[in-house]
Length: 72
Image (cartoon, rainbow, N blue to C red; front, side, top):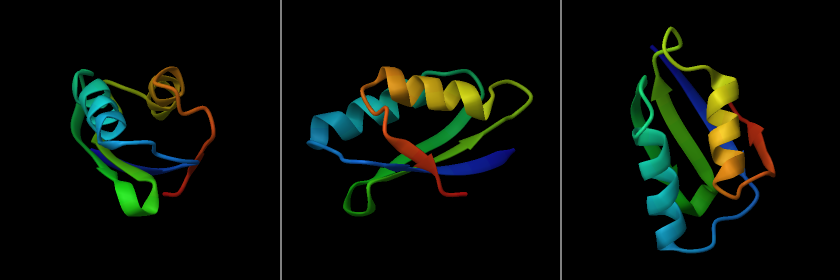
């Protein structure tokens, strides 16, 4: 099990937060996904034998957050 934190450029609204969390949690191998609105961060706990960090980046980019960086 691994944990990664992504820094997003911006979060627009509560529905954006819900969409990000739901999109990540629907993926096999993701155990936990939480958006931290005030810091514009997304924390994801995942099984790297099932899903890759690169796929998580692709999912966030597809969800409309192309400007992100890896924190942890």
